[in-house]
Length: 164
Length: 164
Image (cartoon, rainbow over the protein chains, first blue to last red):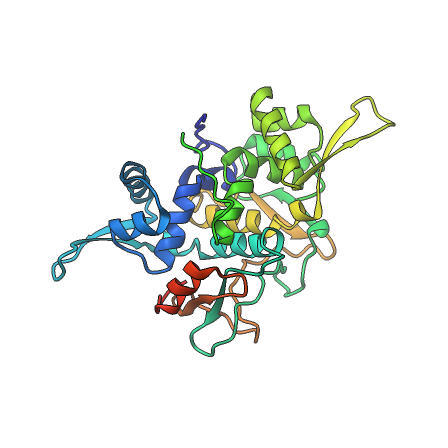
């Protein structure tokens, strides 16, 4: 399959695609969020080949999503842990999971449920809110050029694009 | 690049990857959310080849994310519009955008800003909350088998996995 580089694009979604825009990278991050940290655990849980796993782990390290740590006290010495940048992907993964629960598993129900360890309450559905705390419906979303807009983005979003 | 089918996996993220798990599909959905509906508009805005665009539009239709509508009143007759399933991806795309804004564009600032058409207020950052309205830190997230868990998922998440 073709691989395109979006790094130069003036779009945060396109640039995010450069870092985590393939199935395996997303699923590796999901595993790491579930506490998986050793190479062979990733391999077993994801049923992924060693070669592909190595390549993806390396790429996620290069992008600062995972960090490789040498542990001194255990037989399995190398651990892969999420950085703050990697941990910030929780929201993305949970949005994906909730969409999949709603639209792909609706008949059988959610395979897993997330909850707050502090009180046992289940995680609520992510909702779009504005800075005043008002829920925003997708139809009411609008987009405008931001502080990091280049000339092309400014031209496009000054031209009256309607939806977000 | 290898293409794996995750449809049979008992995991909503893996199954979501089957539907939108490549760069182009995500970016086509993003364009559709911004009001793009004609083939040539997608092509120009995404700088994508006709062949790849056709294939991705077809796949997104097969998965019920986009619908192809024949418009009778215009010269450009065919429009691609988001279905409710496709529109529900707003949260995923916005989570990706916010992560990219924070971690990939931090120096130059966000290329675009979303706001609520009803009052002009900007969109707030997505936050994880439990069903009692309490903000959940990633470290406090736990995972348990849900109503759609298969035997493997039940075994795994009964075995005391800690993080989500």
